[in-house]
Amino acid sequence: MENKPIARTLRLFSQLMELHEVNPFKIKSVANAAFKVDKLPFPIAGKTLAELEKVDGVGKSIAGKIIELFEKGTIAEMDELLANTPAGVVEMMGIKGIGPKKVAIIWRELGIENTGELFYACNENRLIEAKGFGLKTQEEIRKAIEFRMASNGKFLFAQVEKEANELMDEVKSIFPDALKHFAGEFRRLSEIITEIVIVVGSVDHELAYNTFMQSNILNNVTRNENHVSGELQNGLLVDIICVDKADYFKELFLNTGTDEHVQAVLERINTPLDQPETEELIYQKAGLAWMQPELREGTTFLDKAEKNQLPTLIITHDLKGSLHNHSTWSDGVNTVEEMALYCRDNLKLEYLGMCDHSKSAFYAKGLSIERVLQQQEEIDHLNKKLDGFHIFKGIESDILYDGSLDYPDEILQKFDFIVASVHSILKMDEEKATSRLITAIENPYTTILGHPTGRLLLSRGGYPINYKKVIDACAANNVVIEINANPLRLDLDWRWHQYALEKGVWLSINPDAHRVEGFLDMHYGVLAARKGGLYKEMCLNALSLQEITKVFEKKRSAVKA
Image 1: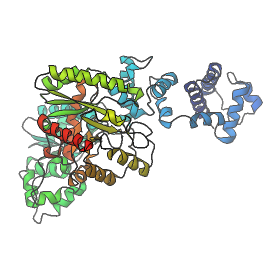
Image 2 (image 1 turned 180 degrees about the vertical axis):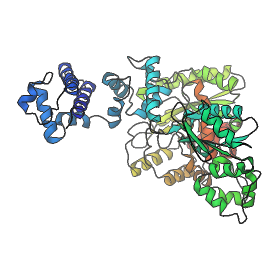
Image 3 (image 1 turned 30 degrees about the vertical axis):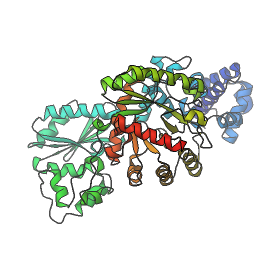
Image 4 (image 1 turned 90 degrees about the vertical axis):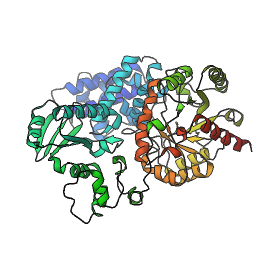
């Protein structure tokens, strides 16, 4: 065994001891030994206990731990600490900028147990509320996590949208007269991006090659036939495909849809594809209506395209209000009034749904019953004050482990609507997770099921659920399912939107905003909704103020009946 792995183990041992507040002298001794062992000019493998005791910085106690590591491959005392530490918490200690003491605060005071949750908390400005953290530290941690996430070659759509559009602007400036468009994942509005693909149709594509090869747009540029490949500053791969203008639309089609989609369309064409003048002509030859790029995932929408029954996909302008938002009453940054005025004056919306955290979310300053009543008094006052706008009284009520909501019925009935979400005890098998959600869905006060799987893209897979059973339960109990628009969530996954719509279940594009800028995440929720085929007639917050007021009143009346 080399010295470095031994030093790494001792370093982790010292960090775990610090995390669990073991004797400070012991922590310092193990940390010092880890440093010394790492710098030794000779290997310590095979040394006897007596020999190890004489090594500078080791001593008798730590020598015994090293021998235990040699003989058993582990240290029992460290294993005990690991058993009492969530794996995600151990992972957080590897993030640049935070040591065990800060991780302990993040874990114990904020209830954060993995890197994904920590990144989410940084985006929601929650970290600055903890002792010893400031805005600068929070930003440094966020950037360190982004770097770690990017190192696996995958990016959130929201992380690369700006850079991708800047790249396209440069392409347009280089080739003002050429045909050019995104293809691949980015054009399909995929939630995870591994590569930016751009198709360029130019009369002189040799000039296109040479220009890209000599420009500063891309790093590590290579050429393979008609492909110029490279990467952006953030490490995102780029593939620019240069073709003659006559071949442009065929190439754009071939490189936009998934392989399954492209193959399925081509199989419907009996004549040579040749050089179509538009993408529409390709679909026309296949006997299909033209399909929006975001629908070109597999074959889900081909039958509808054949029958000319494709939905008119929802757009941001269709949204009339914003539901599921947080204020300074819990873990938000802005007051209820500031949130309302931003929606009314900047976004030109008709209503706002306030859904601060409920009492179980202690880490997010969840509302006690007394504070619920105080907030509702404030909302009543604001509704009298604000012209042409309405604030609905909502709550994001925690779904407890048994599926119940965390307020008694006499409090639940005071809300206009309730978003029910799971935030704690996320380690469940499919049967337990599904049962827990269905119990909450069957609660007559539940209006919307919030972020159904609790996933955080690229960092935390959601708890496993039986989607069909959960969606069927929503259909049976008249419960709306949230499309959480936070680009880290986008949950309900778009792959299940069609099943929900076919069952008559409404969806709601909710930003889960914790500050006024968070409302802008509705953009990403709309993109995800479009991939799932959502149309405004089945989107809750596409209803006007008058219409959604009736929906909420009808739901509450059904409970009283």
